[in-house]
Image (cartoon, rainbow, N blue to C red):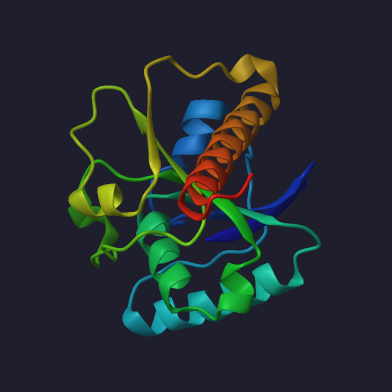
Length: 186
């Protein structure tokens, strides 16, 4: 499923298997609660159609896009980032990824290459180690040990977005420092 939610700085695109359990961000943060488009992924043909729809959603977004993916959506997003035209991928500010603890849940392997945008993998405490391909995405991995607090309305979700922005700033600052050291700039 793909759903777009306009929030503050980003156009948020949520990606998850609509036939599975509720997405992790609903369980962990309690928001967003619904989706605008239903897009199950069952076969290679469905993945192609899904990717074309994601291309359209990203192209039509009125601001930078934050991908928020759960389970099968993580692998699908990684493949989309690898195979879609750079015009679309360049519009992605980053991704919040909530992978399944079971690598067989996706139905297909995820690419083992670095994602072309900053990403944050959010895992519940107590899950097994993430699959190897997630380590190769270049994502920051955060383990969440607290229980969800759904009484706060959208506050937990806004906190998640702020965490992503803070980590993104750190990645950008680190990349700039590395480039300056390499090329002698100031």
